[in-house]
Length: 218
Ligand code: SF4
Ligand code: SF4
Ligand code: SF4
Image (cartoon, rainbow, N blue to C red):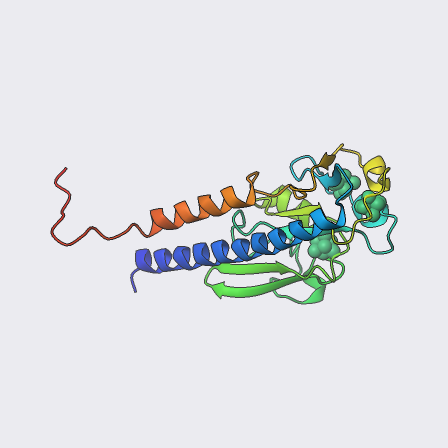
């Protein structure tokens, strides 16, 4: 296979993975949004983190009133570069480029790295293991595309009147949001708009074939 075709196949596969993973993620959040609206029926607003203002200081892991923080890392697959050397996974000075625990920046091993196709790798967060420390977010923001970001999970959050993390946040990243739109996602689009963008990109990558005999004479 020629270099161009190999590159095209790789990009197409990466785009497919990106679209399907982020689509699945958004679909999951859609289900969760229904749950949130039901759970907080009497509440006008909920706490959420603006991912573009958060500086990943680490307070989200330790200031929550819950033993295990309500804040978790999310991954915007539509933004990720599927980098072989992900600075959210390895940190700035990895000992080696392997999945060995000593090379990983995540203190709980919550990020799963899987080979896709040279030179692409996929990174999936195991939310059960994530403590919201933001170390991966910091690395990705500093050296990558910023596809890792922190969000309050509303299936866990108690929606305290005075959120202790919001009070401790040095960057003012905590906002009040309506229960119908409880997540502030990257890219800064609504879930349905993000899906529309992904569909449009898919169309651009695979334009429909012209009908037989209807050639373009422009
Ligand atoms: S509102 Fe309460 S439970 Fe929710 S993140 Fe803040 S401190 Fe934790
Ligand atoms: S580095 Fe911290 S925020 Fe990122 S996945 Fe691991 S525990 Fe979660
Ligand atoms: S306390 Fe604020 S700046 Fe620090 S990790 Fe949480 S949201 Fe980000």
